[in-house]
Length: 100
Ligand SMILES: [Zn+2]
Image (cartoon, rainbow, N blue to C red):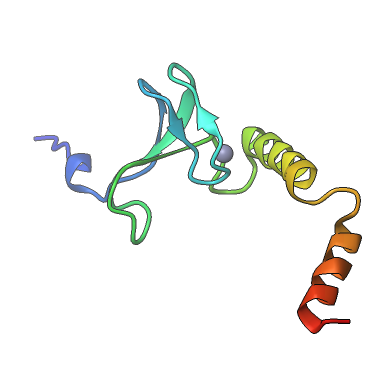
């Protein structure tokens, strides 16, 4: 008889249509409900004790969605944290620290 052995095999990532919005484990971007994402069940990622979502191809580094998300983050990070005058702020901090 033919046996369906795959159920006892190791858990594997699979593409799903997500029912609930979640965060991509790669870029941290929101994966909206109803979109296609990769689901990583418990056991597919070492040290992770719950299922995780990721953009398609996120884990092998070729996700366009991740690239966009990370680029947006970088931009907004620069805008909110650094930007013009950062060097001067460091200079000021150094002045405060060393008392010169
Ligand atoms: Zn991602």
